[in-house]
Image (cartoon, rainbow over all chains, first blue to last red; front, top):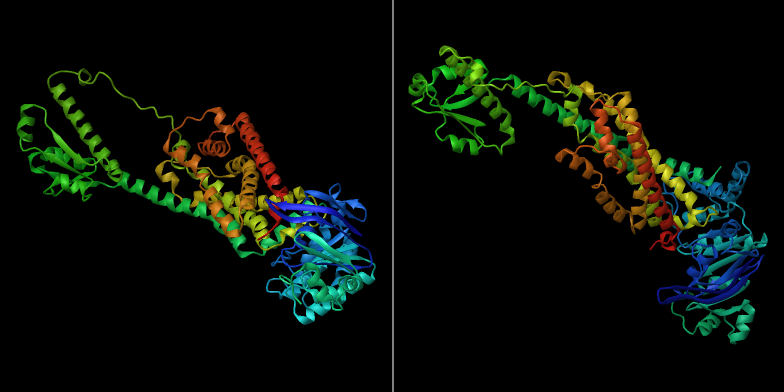
Length: 244
Length: 391
């Protein structure tokens, strides 16, 4: 479970995140929806302790990220906005590198990696060097290495960005699978339809603030719009920076 | 397995697959120095030999006035050549290294027992001609002294009347220290090799990793950044160390390709030399790795890091350049200045002397202290939020 309490982060005079609070529960997919530049990536970066908040608190499974960042990182699987791979290593070597950094025992490594390779349908690329991988192949490799230590909580920053239709569908199936395994899945997106199709709970962010935090049904009810996309637009006040 | 070992092993494996790093660390870096050294030394040695052995031909204006003088010169390897019409012009235009001019009344004055004049026309700013000028001067002075002695003896006087003080040369230079004089630039090759050996790695592991957007996921792992930095620094050190070992091995064979013995010099680049250089360079390997990483961490992109590092590369030239231009007497404290200490130490070993324990201690202590500071600064940079974020 990930709890975020009143996070603030400013870059110079720009308030990128201005008091964001929400909770992402185990066994649920929580979507962070907002237009480009709303502060989603900055919020997520504070969750996985890449950045320190100016104010506020992050708790992952009850552990304070400011107090014990290493424990928090250990219980998180992260697909960051930057998903660069080591192009002179094969996909398998990329995954193994992160596994060892996570301290996955060598005895479990092969089994876990092979299971992920299978689940992500990347058997054909596992032993190729990642140079020249397609966007979809790169994301698959990045997800596999993020989940190799079997984390309870999964953070995905715009996971379907740049993926084609087939790869997007596979990614959604995979996210449902993670949820059904009882994990806490938190992902960000600016694609309204995607959030609507995937989420058990939707946190809408605009200009660094949370403007709604509801189930899809409750959102529809609250705005009086039958269509979820219309509900988003009415909450945020504009459809700029969003995608259907 | 400790995280820093994991990082180290991965960086080594990844970079062994990179042709540019391999070329720079294992081929151009280590071999550039020895190859340039051997070529340069062959040119220098051959030129020295040519000048020393070969008779030089000098245009003589008015040779017909002093046949005895011309004959005596020929006897010591200086041949008279046909005169040139404009001696001053020929020297300035570098058509002749020097020209001798004998005045028409030479014979008359000589037979009267008066002093005569032989003009040596040369241009001292033409360094290339200086050896020839010196040889000719010495030959003329020797001839003058000999003839003078004859005149004194003919008058019943001892030659010491005219030359009461005699200079007796007692040169303490060994054949090894004479060689060392020519090789004051040698330490730079070692520094350069260490620099080139680690350079591409340092760029790749910091600026490159950020540019390729893999630094952010790497930092999301439950590993302190200091451990990641440690692994990376170690990988850079390993590459520059291999470069250094290769270049030392290559230099140890240099003696086979240069005919030192023919000019009375000895150059010992064997085990004792290699061992001492290795020891002296150790702190520099760490210091340069840290400095390179620090500079690369500042840069926004791979290209920018490359530019900064090529500027940084000039710094190690300074002590070598300074020492080869300014004849500084080595004072103990100088060994405590990184780079300068290495330079002095290596030259000392080249001269066939031992580096004392105190000097070695100073080089190591100051070098590792500087390295520790550089590592501390780099670690501080590594902790910044800005570092991980690309774009």
